[in-house]
Length: 391
Ligand SMILES: Cc1ncc(COP(=O)(O)O)c(C=O)c1O
Image (cartoon, rainbow, N blue to C red):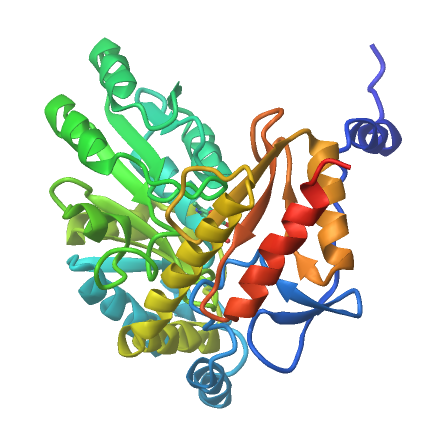
């Protein structure tokens, strides 16, 4: 058989036919709050970023980035294990370890890389990796990269996980779950998952990209919310590009776990360290999140406000108490049309479609931020209600 060409036309035509072609929009920060943007040159309010605390434009964060650039330069010049591990990286690792109450933390350039590195470092061909069916793509891809046997359990179903673990007859078991599910906003049943893992001898890693900084009495995420520690959840993944408004990610855990990742995580070893100014910005953001707890209280108050008004307006909300508030619309075309109609009214809410979410569960993924005004939230609910009202 001759080698087939890689033909782009049919690939793209297929996406068009299924209404799944995605489009990038050019964003520019506008005057005002972090959520005030220009989108393709037009003034909009951003209701789909992950900047939950509004820290991406916070003066302390921006000034830390600029100041560190003058001291350390723009780039880290090498990977961490060569000459790229700079003082800002070391400092943020120590601060994240202290903040999460773990012995050590390791900094990755992105959450995607953290999850790939973690899964492939801890599991191999003879092992089994378990994951919730709604896990983030980076956890799914991490499992695949490890070459372990993959078992997917129904969403938030600890009993199903238990049954799957019981059936495993050899090798190690690694269980991966989002803490707060990125497209749904609900929390994983971490106490139940942890109890199953402890009973069966499985290792539990929780990716709390959307919980850290936002939920828990002091913003320490889903684990704090449930009162869980290192015994129950030995590996905690966090990102710095969401509530911390900057960039990067980390894994926190025991000194032995982190040393294992330093030695074995290929997405840590074989890549240039993230720029020191970025680490400095993330350090400042972590400090601001601690110094200004009103930001967390505000985003949660705005979330409650959105839910109350949206419920009154009859919007099809998902069962979420976090700033991720999906409006469930079903078909991809419906979600895209709603997103475009909102854009015309000055609100940017992305339509989330397959393969990011299962078929027929396309949605508007509304996210709230401390950088929103009450009036913005009210106007968004009114606009969605108008757009979805039967004509
Ligand atoms: C649950 C979860 N984990 C990991 C990531 C990846 O993080 P990053 O954007 O830093 O690569 C995301 C989102 O992007 C996410 O939602």
